[in-house]
Length: 142
Image 1 (spheres, rainbow, N blue to C red):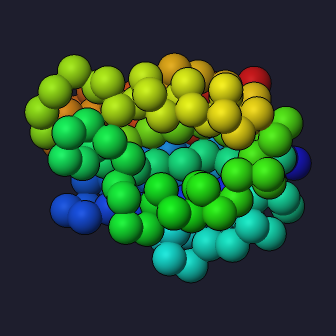
Image 2: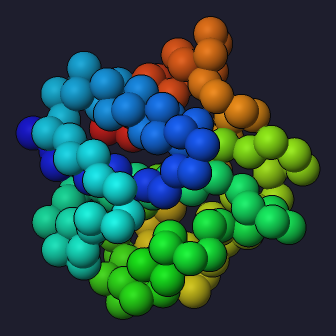
């Protein structure tokens, strides 16, 4: 059984809702899942997992959340080297550039094995995007 840790930051609840749906999908596919707000996460939550899934909404000028999520990622930079990582988040404007930049940074700067291009949902996950989140959780295990 693969151990999957989902670490996220959510301001409005949209990214948290995505995290829960991704967790459901991964559990349906047989994973052991730990769901953590970034304020509760530690480097051990990265090292002990087979796959780490990170979630952050787009903030400001399309960047990862800067007060908790980005500092956590920066503090764990060495821990991500060679680790299987997937990314997700919600946004309300823009084109998703923050996700492209985040994916590139995780791979190029931190040496993570990034498993996808990042799942993004405009606003709260509803209808088709709810299913996309669940499928995202399932596909990462395959």
